[in-house]
Image 1: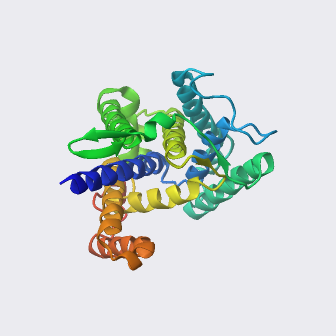
Image 2: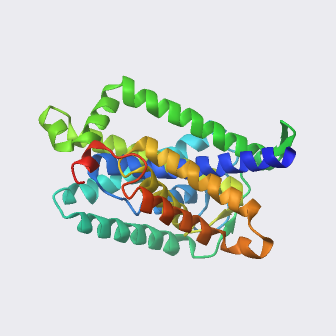
Image 3: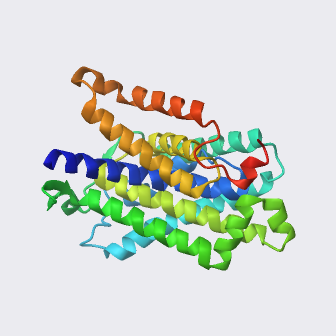
Length: 304
């Protein structure tokens, strides 16, 4: 029973992290039909505010030097500001470009951000000790669960509930939902395109920063390429859920997290290093069954 509960919390925490990543991508795709491949570098850039570029040492932004709320707000603001700047300086000028052009641009933008970090910090991973108490185990339902896992699941639940409320109860949320269904029609009905797109980028960047904060507490390392694996998994989760569907992106992230955990536990010991191959085989099987993902939005129906 204890082992089963441990696997359950592992699956939920991993899936919650993937769901947050997929949600950040789905927010942008919903309003712009843009798969932002620079999202992983938004994650990385937001984390590097904890590192001093001159000494390559951990900046004194720990709880003892800065209040936790101020540190978290600073990182989230960094992610949101970076995403908004990329929209204003780059993506806004490509709204009428072909989808392939915007996709290549997002790739290029990610490489630019990554190389800026390389120039400032070098490619060597850096250890960071941020809130070590979160890695201490907590006894829960007979299982010893790291507090960080509980925090990850709790943050994901709160954010998803808040986002659902925002999309249904606020003007900007209703405008984002309308834009996700049919952007041209929504704009013709008075939806302010620039405002909606900026809001989507800001929320996506803040989510990227939050993911980076959770990841650095989990691994204890900061690396200029740390966001790339998360970007890949988040993109796959978004495709599984159905491009443009926020609910589908969340569900896709949870499914990949559960599948990864179950395979890690159930595969023979010699096969566990190849776990990801089995995960992506399952992804192929799912997409053969549902090529357009689990949920199909209005905009995607128009293309089918």
